[in-house]
Image (cartoon, rainbow, N blue to C red):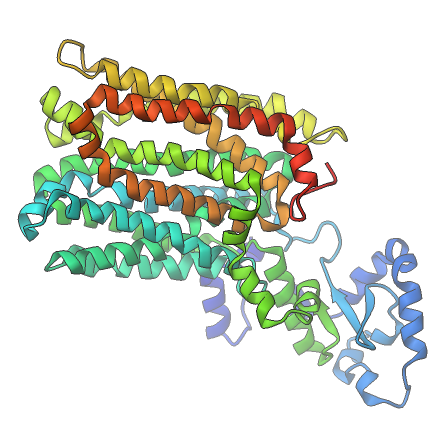
Length: 561
């Protein structure tokens, strides 16, 4: 347990206040742990690196003090000159690679106890839910905002759109940063969420519409890291065969957030006004912030090994100890770092698989957000529901998820995992559920649109809306798994690009929703969207059949499967 607490924000604070005397790392207590781990691996690695090491030894001047190991390190019984494993040569200089202390290294997130893996996964899910709920919880208070600030309906709706734009663009910065070994993931989650919570104060106390809209955009930006990078964190701690479970549940929490927002916001806005909708999710996010402070350790292997190498250099006074990420970074230029920051954009628009899958999931997301405007028209104007009751109709979408998610997990257990370990496995094998999802979205839109009339009971459009979740679960999850498996080195950037696409549609669709439905009507308006969904139906089939060929034409995708 100490291993995990040590790498939380709480652990970092304790180490700082105690001068690193508490929560010490094993290699701070005994730096020779590094040498012993190498000696255990000699059999498997000496052949690979011995020739390189021997050649470098011949080029050394034994009288050159720069090549000698630090004396403090020798007093620990460790002589780097004797090591012949994990020794590489870089620019004529020996570099000793710092890696895991064997396959059972407790600091490796893949080796953490199941209880900690579940705790980390839960935190990613509840963080995802908390930020997403902030997008839609204030929607029932739009009329109240219009009255307070004298704003038009479209301007008041911008509070939803700008928040969505903010959390769409945020991951384009935060996700590539989380892939940088010096930064890692833990700190980004905590500090951005802290800013997110603090910025709710000027949002809730806004005195005019411009102030409100500016801080809605900023809070969306700072609340965004978990929305895209949470999947990468789950991939850090689970083996590839089990990541699908975590991704499915994490993505489902991301859908539940916008769904539960109007439910909580409907009754809150009706009783207390729009400002209290801000305070409700702020309390929730504050609770999550405290939980992250105490219980979220670093999961990035590159960051953990970077810090390990840094500690060993300090303990041994030998600057030849480097992690793989540091060795790689030594060859990186400023241009390379800019490429990393722009990777989410370049991958999204240069990879056909990524582009069309992002576009498809964005369509689903746009439909979800268009319902924030459509549901009040249907259930408020046609069926006479008040704002609290209008929020409750979103439970139809939730019930659809309760039914579909367990069925999808059964598919993962019996349809994916048994195939995953076989040499014949292909990433495209995770796509068959998308065939059901591609059909369920048009069914949902046509059913909901044409059953929403006074002569038909209100339960019918709610049942129709439940098919939306079938599409979300059976499209989002296979697509996320497919992209993660097909582009493993760039998972965080891929998910960031996907988040931008989804957020763009989620921001734009509500702005024209009311005009669309008022001019065309509920039935024809949803039929238009359903027709677009029908046009996208072939996409999963195309990539299921031709995805492997397309991957092999890409320089970024996997070619080994």
